Image (tube, rainbow, N blue to C red):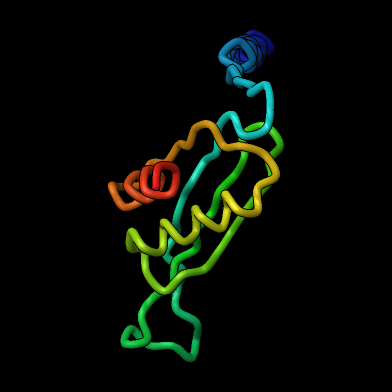
Length: 118
């Protein structure tokens, strides 16, 4: 029966080789501020909170080059909150932010435009 195990091990080795060949291609940015990722997350209610209290939202900005992180908690996910968060990031960030990337809707993109081009 050694032939069956050798065949099985051969498939496992081939699978490992295939995974290594498909290794993710990571892109690298050249300097801080070249690309800033923006995202939001609705926070879960705490044990003593009810749905009437409403959810809070975590806003996050991450510089792709330096991995410098900015975060803030806001009562809603409105354009005003997005704009306030982005203004805070721009004010605290020691370098110029050239581009932003977000998968969120128009609230975030409108806030970027409003904060960048007053």
